[in-house]
Length: 99
Image 1 (tube, rainbow, N blue to C red):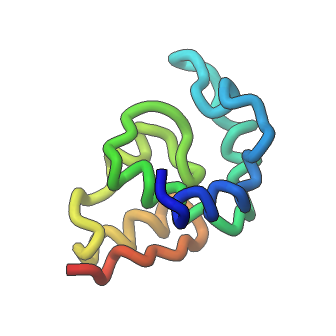
Image 2 (tube, one colour):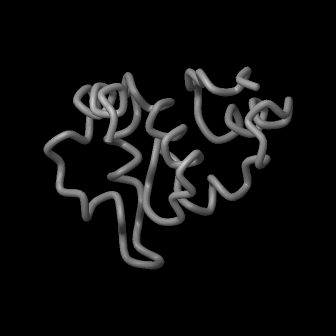
């Protein structure tokens, strides 16, 4: 884990929260985990981490695995921003303009 990766995680709302909350059993509610994510200042970095690293399970950046699968695969695709906005309010994506 590099230093920048650690930095965003140290600012996360979920720091110190039971990780099981973010990996609910199949069919269980994700509402409580998403409430922790709501308003988190590093929500975008969290979602970016999940997308870049292919996280298939759990709540990352306020989105479930099903919600993440609905996103276009390339974050530079114009549809990506629209898809994100349909799932969440606003997220800062540093990587969407990268080469």
